[in-house]
Image 1: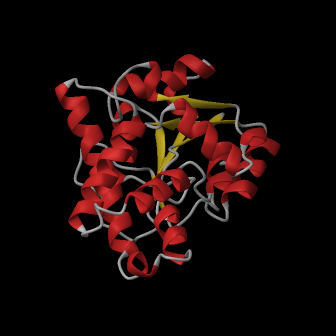
Image 2 (image 1 turned 30 degrees about the horizontal axis):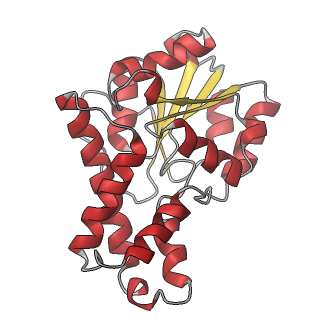
Image 3 (image 1 turned 90 degrees about the vertical axis):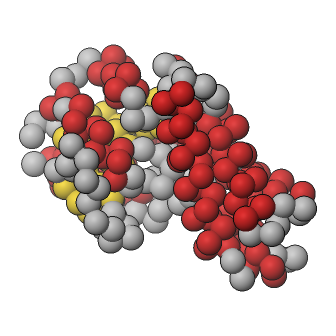
Length: 228
């Protein structure tokens, strides 16, 4: 494949998007949330993504922080928690310091040791992404953090994937793009990247024009794939 550049989606790929709800549920006063936090986390993530797609289609762009708040507000109302302002504030605060998946630091260090370019390409706003990267201590193993705010539209718009070529000056087939979102991996494959879908939940492959080159359970095998 002659891969020179490994690019990762952030939320759900490097960073565990369920971590905010899980941590809040374990804190004092989180007894009610503890009963439903997996459902809340799933609802929150689903609406966050849906709102990003709808805004991309309608041309009504806003930053990902606004979309994240809107998705949470919808999820809290659905679960009967919309009157808990303190919980809302805590969940949003925790989203700035999401935990990285356990294999992430070692995986990125291995890529850098092999001489690969490494980057994030995310819908996240720059300040959100920097907060997550710093919290997870990943700054020294990433060459760049690319946000869609530079082009003003969310993934899977092709101009988002263009940012990788512009930043690193590489051909599409030299890029390994990694995402936990099946639709993102499919769009990147259609664009021309070599793609890996991190399918932690064991879901079916999305019925879309592009298909991922690799389907993985976690990120551990990425250095091996990139070095083939």
